[in-house]
Every structure is written in structure tokens, then in C-alpha cells.
Image (cartoon, rainbow, N blue to C red; front, side):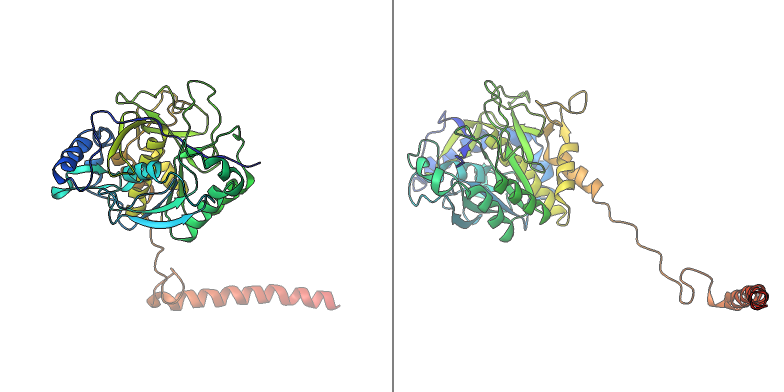
Amino acid sequence: MSRLLVPALVAALVVGIAPASASDDVGFDDVGEAARAGQWQLAAMRLPEAWRSSRGEGVVVAVLDTGVNGRHPDLRGAVIEGPDLTGAAKGLWGRHGTAMAGLIAGRGHGDERRGGVIGVAPAAKVLSIRVTLENGDPLRVQQRSRGHDALARGIRYAVDHGADVISMSLGGGSGAWEGSALEEEAVQYAIAKGAVLVASSGNDGESANRKNFPAAYPGVIAVGAVDRSLNVARFSNRQDYLSVVAPGAEIVTADGDDSYVVSDGTSSAAAMVAGIAALIKAAHPDMSPYHVRMAIELGTRRRPADGYSPAYGHGVANALLALREADRLDVPAPPLPRPGPYFGNGPSPASRGPVVAGMLLIMAGMSAHVIPRHRRRRT
């Protein structure tokens, strides 16, 4: 069955932040300052403190989405162009993917980069892989037949081209909520290669609350959304595979046409958790996907009373606490004792004589015991 992937951006609207051209320096700077001021998640996730130990240096985060506009002022120098796997050469391009990339690795702009969107891992690189089309794009119908395996191919491409983290702010659609063998195999391939996979849990929590793929594949960090009060957003899906929740309401994001929008959705929440994974991988490059996930889940706030719930998962993701847990989990094994020069870790050369003499006595006793037995057998 062909599969339509629907980005999880909902209620995208410009509120209080008017679009401005990048060529309009004064206007765009004002808009950029407003965008930065609206990023309430920076304090909620304790990012300024987390950046003292990691900013995502050396990490590549693959953004499997609608494409990323690397010319946006907040993303200049951060984007590696990957392939378009949708099978639709034209069409609407890159708004949702640009928004997610900004939340992961946005660098801001202006004086000391104080304006614009700054991502969770502002020193990381983004590998843009187009695997789906924008909502409302009429060419999405064509993608059903031409690009039905785009996500699976995108996951494999990302891993084979150096991605440490794979961010998938997208999900099921058109009735195809059961997943696919190709995608699940690609997920397991990526995990086996050491990549951390993150996906949005879905936005129909108020209605059907369906199982959402790729979030539901084993090994994927599934992320729900919370509002400014850190309460679970009504639209956020509640499922027993949910890992954590993160800010996903009233989120200021970069827009594809060099402006900004304010949006709600588990897409934004997943992108931010992908950014936390990038911070961890920068600080602990050899940490396994399992331990990265464990650090994120243990380093949460608002943990449910029973330790877990389908609404909150393990709690609200927090960058600083996750890094602390990663430090605790990534304790190097104690070195093995150095072997002694003669008998492993045994006696020193000065005591070699007594040991040799004792061994000779043991051997002599064994010979005395064995020889008579052989004689008895021969008679």
C-alpha cells in the first residue's frame, strides 16, 4: 500500500511577527528580535546552562521532511543539501522542514546572533533530505505512487552519509497507520549503525488518537507536546510507546521565505528532542542510541507519579538534566590491572624461587601417584 506522510505542523499562523524580507535590514532585525523573545522553550529546557558543556559541535542531524531552506538567515552555514526522494520534482518546498531545522540547529543572526531563532544544538549541522511534501501541495497525490518508500530510503541515506541523529517530524496519513516493513527495517538498520531516531507522536490526541509511524517503531524516541505551563497539549497523541514530551505550543519557528511563524504541534517537540540528542552525541560521541534515549528519559521534569504515563511518557524533556544523566551513564570502565612480568598478576620476581619449587613438589607427588596405578593396570 502506498503511504502518504503528513507533517505534523498544525495551526501555523503569523501572530505578532510580520514577515519581513532579509534585504530589509532594519525591519528584519526587529522581527528577529521578536522571534528570539518568543522562544519560551529556551528557559523551560534550561538550554543556556546546557550550552556551557555542549552545543552540538561535530554532530550531523538528518532532517527528513519537506526540505530545508539553507538561505534562511538563521540557518546559513548549517545545512548540508541531501536528495529529494519524493518523486515530485516541483511543488511547494521547504517551509515545514526549514521550521524544524531552525529548532534543531538554528544559529540566529544579527549582532552577536541575538536575533532570530536559535536551535537546541546551534553548533550542529543539518542534513536535509526531502521525503514528503507540504500540506496543501496538490502534488502529494503523485507522491503516493512515486515516493511511497521515501522515508525508508531517507533513513538509510542519512545513516550512510554520516547522520548521528535522525529527526522525523512527520507521521501517518491517508488511513495508513500500520507502518511498513521497509520503514521498520530501515529504522533497525539505522539503530544498528549507531544513529538516534526521533519522531513526533502525532496531533490527533483530541480525536482518533491513532498509533503514529514512524514514532511507533521500536527504538524510535517518540515525542509528545506540552504547552507553556508544561501541561500536555490537547492535540498531543497519548500512546504507550511515548518516550517524552517537549515544548510544542506557541513555538516560534523559521519560515521558508525568510520570515517566522508561530505554530502548534508535536513536530516542534520532536525537533527539540532531536536537538537534545545532538547535544549528548557531541559530548559523548560513542554513546549508543539506547543510552542516549535513557539519558533523555531519565533527565526529565514533571515525571509522572508512577514513573510513566501514555500522556507524559517519562516526563518533560530537559537539555541540562539529560546531559547530566549522559555524563553519569557514560562512565568509562575501570582499567584492567597491569599484568606482572612473569606470572600474570602473581608474585614478583623475588618470590619466583619458592613458587617454582612448590610447583615441582606438586608435579613430583602427582607422578608418584600416577606411576603405581599404571603398573597395576599392566599386571
